Picture 1 (cartoon, one colour):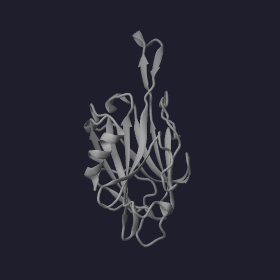
Picture 2 (cartoon, rainbow, N blue to C red):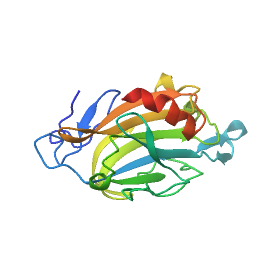
Picture 3 (cartoon, helix red, strand yellow):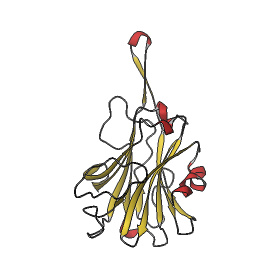
Picture 4 (cartoon, rainbow, N blue to C red):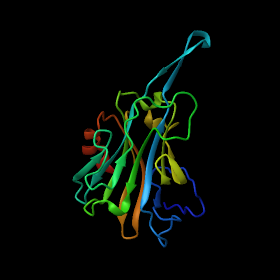
Length: 215
């Protein structure tokens, strides 16, 4: 299903929905070159007995991008341990090991910038994933959100799409999710929301497993 962003500038993507990464979301306008993948999540708040006092439990989620060629061979991985892609087109902001305590804020906990015009021509698919480094289950975490936007890292001019990962029974007991993927088409780059959850416990496991199921 396509979504016309000229009519809906901010949307909540559901599984299988696709957007054109162009200035108005249609295939007839100029493609975007710089986009940002922002992930944000909350730390876990524990209340004391009879509601007195509270403690904060850090939540360490990792946002990563997996780059594949048309044969489904892994070309590169951008994550907290390899923050810039080999072609220099993608950059990770760094590791957030805490999450956001208290009410949800608009800031990203981790941001990955993507210059689509510079991505190695061998790369046809870029898969966005989120996994739990300390093995928190997703249903334990107050909120998890993905957004794709223009502007600058952590400072959106326009949020092209928002993808909420909370309140979904498929996340119960899971530690990893393939959020969605960018892919090349004859009309330019597109993004599709996937929302495939798994019990995989590392980036390398996801790269060899559920990430390959989306294309």
